[in-house]
Image 1 (cartoon, one colour):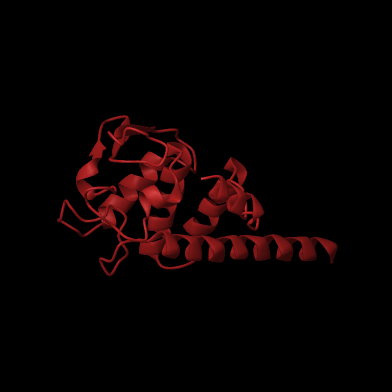
Image 2 (tube, rainbow, N blue to C red):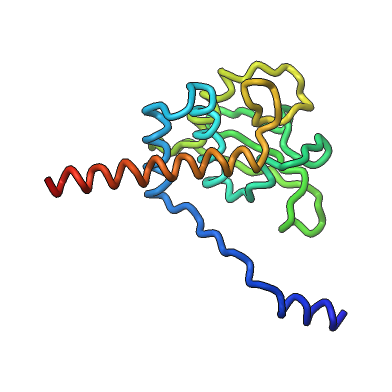
Length: 172
């Protein structure tokens, strides 16, 4: 056990990812609403980003690389109420007992409202299989963490480029 601890201390430092702040989230949603991918993927990304932000989800809780209906969020785990959406999280890295917990997302009336984004996404969702992943791509494949990160990087790059263009236009 001591050797494992020593190896961990000796290893390369892990890359620390910074969280997405509310101002960045609002800008990302703005870019998605203008249309960056296609209407389905834009809506899916809005739903995933706002749900992850307001529900304090880890990326692998909503979009795992290997989906299991016993462990991950399915269509049957999402409940709609008048003022909120309830997502039943079956297990989590931070939930030691792994008993599951209900996460409530409330309407907030802003550009980054998770309830609005999830309602819009649900209208586009074609799956009737309640054991399928809640976040599905348009080809009915699971929206994996890898796909989420790839699209998020593309979005952040577009956001950076649009800010650079506006800075250049300001100079001239």
